[in-house]
Image (cartoon, rainbow, N blue to C red; front, top):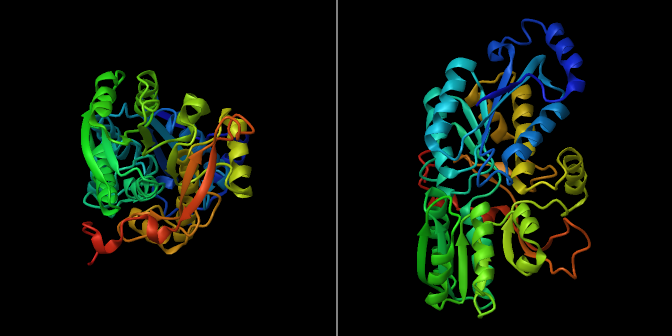
Length: 409
């Protein structure tokens, strides 16, 4: 069910009303309907709830509040909906938002199957989408459009970071446990490429339905493969369930090692350091990486009661960049705003050395991290040690390899 919020913070209601009343007709002339309308679409109740979900909506609300609640005198109006990880539900919701509510931009976008369906609708109607939750690198490769931007991460740097590091440490035989839809397929392909380029071998794989609660048969297949590394090409509750089942079956005790290829802060927090210690992972952001990150994360924590994931931080960052572009361009026209966003570098609490390429990929530094041991951790959310930085230009798929129709190779 779609929810409408004319403003996310009660304290802003008076000032927004004043701003709207005071705005001249000419100031709003280039803003359609005199309002900047944003729809937040995400899994609000299922497998991916905790990595984006309601917390991502709070991050978006924080960005709107920090921006002042209006753009050039035009109020910012928010809508939100649960896509239930269904491509049909997501596409139909966005189509209704455009047809009946004239939404300008869609934020959130988590399950890659939902994102690919939604971005087709956005392209057909020339509206803008900012993808913060989806992982499939195909979102800005074969499924690129001139109407969306991919902000936080994708499967290409996840493989470049985690899989390459694991092979270099001797983990040269892999078994992949893969979520059977667009995201899992993309991650499996990218990891296989990196493992083989690094001199390793993928000795087997199995795909599981999305979502899955019982991983017993899949973990048994992984154990039977004899692979040194069991790579988890899934995310959210699926990853948590897989790691829990692996622990129950004594997978790591028998000498195999788990590699979480898309691990979120909330996953590690839920599982605990005893189960996840020393796990290598690649992340686009971490709340304790520097003073800027800590300052924003504390504000978020005060609102939500938990530290933010990289997706939730990315939703704030991308929303601020979007609103700044609307203000600078003087319009909410999708192509004008996208061009303005692409013309401005991104250096904020979230992104370092960030820029938006012609394929819609926002490239920025990524980080190889390791989960701390219980002895190393100094608090409930002190979970990662950042081992190294993967520079922006090395992290993402080079444009020379792109299949995107927007790239001139």
